[in-house]
Image (cartoon, rainbow over all chains, first blue to last red; front, side, top):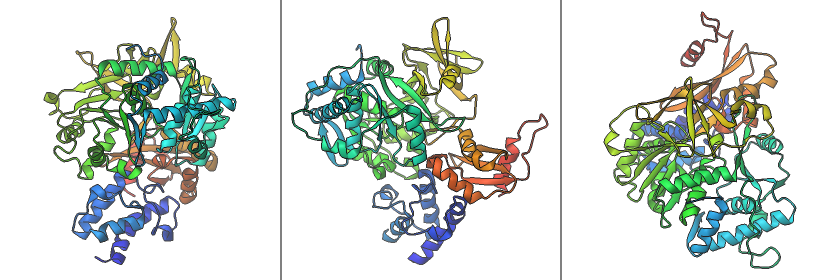
Length: 84
Length: 471
């Protein structure tokens, strides 16, 4: 799965909740921090990653999922999958 | 050990082990001598500017200056008021007003006093301050709108420490986790139990906190203290593997219900650890009851008991509600005498605190937590009054009926807000984001034609929550 497809999968999982939080669809992406923005709590964030693992068909290194700068941002999630 | 004051304990350790590590934070190690000198300088600044004995706020980032500030403020005989780093700013304003705060300790100012050597604001200790003063004001969610501040005295903290140091063998070689936010009273345990015994306080970065188990292993943590949710998070991160925490010898849990299954998972990772479940509301200073689980009982299901109250404390059960008295009872709620009088009542010269927690006592005199007498709940250890969400929306809704309810989903509690009639949901959510911390934001705001009622004329909560499933 390439970056565009992965971004699409991620956006689909966030968009409804984002809209309910008053965020515009175009704001869901890039440097938006999924945890700090209140979109997800830490458990919700990990659940999102495991859900994406199933979609992508491989596991990522969850132990280091939070280590990279901006790890909990939209782009950070993409990077986590693209580098694993 | 007769504990008179948390600052005395820190000073004793600084005198006994000046060159030992007191704090490891942001990749930096700070010795007792350095932390003592730094906090002395802060105390002199506070006293010099005429704020001794007042309430002093700071933004409670888990960075070195915050730890020095807590000590410095208390050394000046003042009480600290930690502000949540993520705000929101409107909540800070409410907190500052309610606590009557006139002074803030800023990070830059504290940084300037780091490593200061002698002189007018030198490293010599400020004079001892009265031990009957206030230690801190911590804010929790309030059911009548806005956060409410609990005023806790230094003597309250001393009573807690006296118990912990008497019943647990903490050592100067121990490395203590500092997982709790500084706005949580459980962080007071982290700091002052550690510094009382000359241990090293290990502070993870936010990302290290998320992967607390691997951080604990890397940092050589020997005393683990967390909410059970943090253990659940580690399970989901697949880091709580067999033997993953070989150095942990004491594990304490508090802040929300601990299940046997979570405890089993933790034990697999930390096979040497004593396992202690603590219980206590902020109003009774950190924790006031404890249950130590023996490994033979780990096969059970359900919730781990909250144990017996500490020796200095008396507990009684009125109906099903636990009431407490003793030296750990806080002073009350700042700026809210009515709420204080409701929660803390004097009977025949004895002051009792109504916890709002429903409990039962078994034939071994062990307390079991059953739930709440009201709607208060815990989200990742945060105390949340759903009515505070409703109160935050009230100005926008006029008299429109609104209610926020909790719903358990996949092991986590989430909030749903129901509003009668047609509303602008994004606008309401924006308002909530402006005034509430993120953990209090509802998952969704749902519109209902009218609030459903039961045959007894009460709000039908079940019917409302069913609407979540039906979209």
